Length: 284
Image 1 (cartoon, one colour):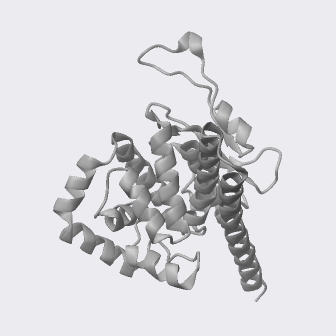
Image 2: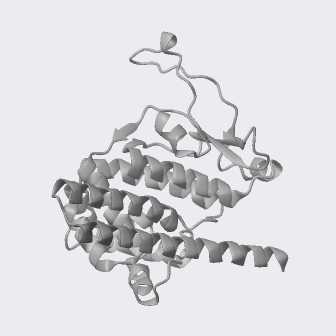
């Protein structure tokens, strides 16, 4: 809760009534809200679905890459939504059911951040390297596909076009490809699940929950870009810390900063053009 307040994101965690809480029962303050997938109430409240999707994605990516203390069960009944009491037409989410959390260790956070940075920037070598840090070597395309629910061919294509655009996760063609992966590489998937750090299993569960919420909202936001922003920040901080510990020269600090700025420029440019495109579609 303290971390989320520090992010500036419009997210509420109900206060705990410690006098009524035990090892088996967590008693928290009641907070108003409806399910984040309740499209009827979202539209009735005049809340933008795109802002809802971006806020939810930002909250959980912030937990993963900034704090490392992650709510791993964000299904639709645990992510409540309401109009912000002080910002008309803006969303505020309420996180409930805090029984399944995982603290990610620093090494996992860094490797996972490098993986997501590689995915959003379509850096195949970066993806391969980060997967290696997670214990996955030859099957790195499969791990990337499982995390994004998109075919790895899309990453290869974006590496050639230099685009951040990604196909909607509910596209029928992509679903067929992912099903094909699952059927063809079932043994490899089982083997990989035994290899990856145990923390990754809860991340898979969390991603599936969030993907369901996002699809219910119509997938209005490119979540690869949202994750890429937080992941690249984590990589930048990790690189800077390593340079400090090794008494690295100014060139190392400069290189990590330029790499981070490059990602931010790409992401900010993409988001700016996306907003302009949406505005033009509304006007037409």
